[in-house]
Length: 195
DNA sequence: TACGTGATCACG
DNA sequence: GTGATCACGTAA
Image (cartoon, rainbow, N blue to C red):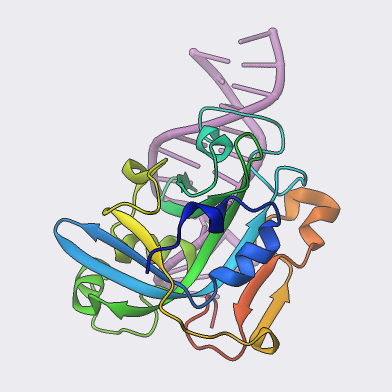
């Protein structure tokens, strides 16, 4: 069943980032349903320097200030759409970057979008999984319990001992906050990024 | 390790 | 207006 707003509205973004592991992200784009099991996430809090919202609201990050349970999608390096889950209450601009999925539903559609026959790496990175699922900035601000993009709990059970935490990737500009162990992924999982 | 790529943001 | 920068991916 779909996750409801109480899941997203909680204050502890790292707890939610851990609990998103094993949930299933779906989209319906161009009439095609695609979905994948979340295997890697990164938590961002407005209280630390790695977060886009650390210096207040801008045109790009304004949806992060909405109540949790909406999508934050932005363009990175002029090329890659990045998908985040907004969490915490209104004005508390936390978000969780989804970094990798295990393809589950609509695999042929995803392969077509990635222009490859290989299934192994089509969703192993934050820029790739958005392309595979047809996510772009038109979904920025959309609620995550609708029919364009949503997240389901399908009762995959993740043991906490199978979750690895590490420092987040690509945020060296954040100084000491770049060292926070706020990247979470499933141990020995072949679908995480950079493998 | 290098660089494409274009929106964004902090300056004035 | 302008220029540095960027939560990546790929090739080499």
